[in-house]
Length: 239
Image (cartoon, rainbow, N blue to C red; front, side, top):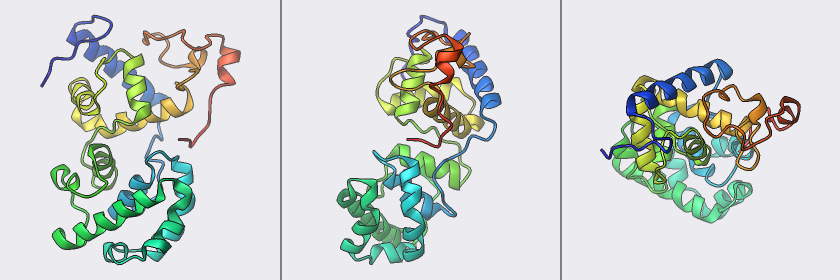
């Protein structure tokens, strides 16, 4: 595993201590952090996560109730009428590509896994439309297997926190895996994503009300006045 170089020049020990302290603060700030995609089983979460690519969780959740009723099993997706499936998922964007992924994923599930979603990373990433990010979402939230979900919010925050300067999602995942205990990987992912959606926005973070202000080397890139910053906070769920 490549050695992580903190942008702030910290020793690995100092970085681990700061990262874990930040994670504890986020745990207090977001005690109910969770996956914001609605699902009842691994297949539903897998489909919802595929649909969430370049789409908000909120939008996905408006589509999946109809989708899950019409296609309750992998066999149903595998045999789906493409035009009908595309019509249902159209609001999520890129609906043709997503339909290809869902139908292809379901056909592989039926052909190789008995129609059941596998609970191992090495199996999940062999499914059409499923990369490490999607696989870790499913493992962490449907199977209870710790996983780090490196989405755009997560990437932005680990850079602002100076946890790493890596830009490749797999390398970011490896770095964070060295900073945070394995048992916390899934919840740490939720906390960073929630914080990115609600406070540490891409354009203008609400620095003045951020609970991590004292530990964040990027403090001040957004307004530090509490009144101004408070107006930027979003209650979620969001993209």
